[in-house]
Length: 333
Ligand code: HEM
Image (cartoon, rainbow, N blue to C red; front, side, top):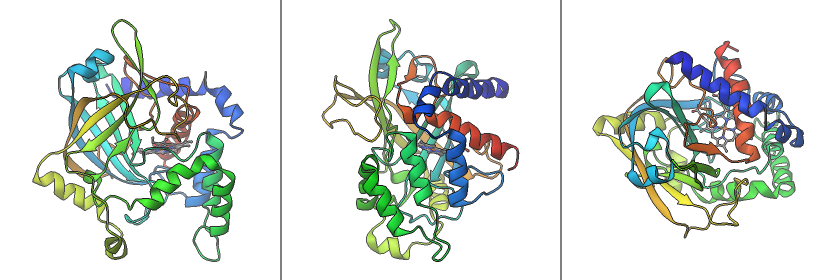
């Protein structure tokens, strides 16, 4: 089973290296260069992820709905419980980043479907991403490099980056306005990209999804932002799962003509038709070292039959970038 999983990662990586190479070329920056930029800004923690380095593993299951099964033939929506390996994370390559940092929080899911097939969803707690093309992401990572004099990013460089990259502003605005969640369990997580649901008659529907927490959305208050310790997210999630299962509903919106298909920096209007595609239940959480999620590459292009990517250049670029980081950390670098 493990072997077939690795093959699926490899396949997804090849997909991203093959057809979408044109995107990487247009982007005038390669996935390897972006990973090197992450290392240059955050340093290298040997054997660890180059981005979202700080994280927590979790286990659970997902049950899909009939309504989702009408739009997608994926085994994910067959209505039977599907085991899930999850990882919650804090964005950036600093393993010691405080949990109060005004950056993204991640939820990555590996759905283990029958016959060793997999579906991945690797999401953030922001409704949009901060780059329409890989170059913007690269420029942002470079601009964030700490100034040796202060140990912090140079505010003038960050200002210049925002001024010259309008596609970064919607996510930056969201992160500035909204404090981070008080717990991984009290955050919404967004798929951000547009994906395709394909039904049994091969009909394609353009969709975006998000996971909405049953515990409600709760953020740190301004006072807590000042007093909270550097590390509380992991223990809070472990404690929360010990009290009982933590649940999220997967909500899917259906796009209308004119809605952005390949631009993850633009949200869809809120009045799009929506349906509940399933419920995720997380029943336990644990530190990542040696746990099930540690050695997974949550490549977002690992998809089951019935769910497919769009031509979003960021989505297609992610797969080879994750592969480059994964190859390094697996070899202990
Ligand atoms: C140009 C765009 C992006 C690049 C270059 C990039 C790069 C990376 C890299 C190198 C990793 C570490 C992979 C590993 O070692 O396993 C990572 C992890 C992650 N990224 Fe991205 N990323 C991009 C966009 C996004 C977007 C759009 C999202 C959300 C929709 C996202 C969510 C995450 C999450 C949640 C993780 C942690 C996954 C885990 O827990 O293993 N990233 N990213």
